[in-house]
Image 1 (spheres, rainbow, N blue to C red):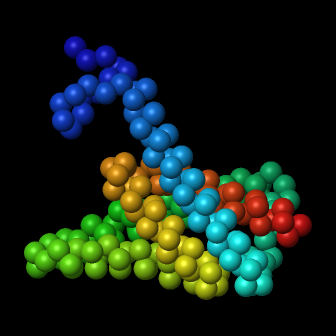
Image 2 (cartoon, rainbow, N blue to C red):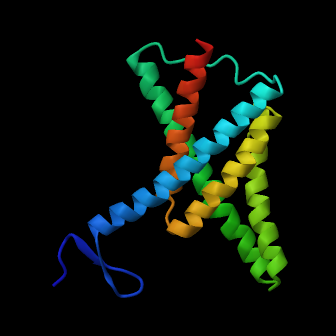
Length: 171
């Protein structure tokens, strides 16, 4: 009889919930740390090139606006992770696998990351390059963790931290 705190893994070994939490935490903190490092480097580049950071960042004025902001940050991060880390690479990979050529596989991976980056073009060229690097980091996190949760939570906290940072700096 299997305990509630354990489950049978793909390789047949029993894994505890504590192990799962440690695995999630390792993937999350590594992903978030790399995203934050990337953001810091691009902020430094913006300062060096005298390019303005995000403008017109407005913090929520009341609790209802705060809840709406959290919902929008959460839903947009989840949507982007599902689309650019799960659906597009799988759909493009399925098309490519029929051709059975390894170079096409990497082209499909690159296409998903490029689409993610270009979806952020409205934020400017530095943000586009930042999204390109972050897209690679998030895709690697998804592939290594075999779960959408670590990159989703890292993406959500990254967006929330960026919004708060830019609002505090601008304000």
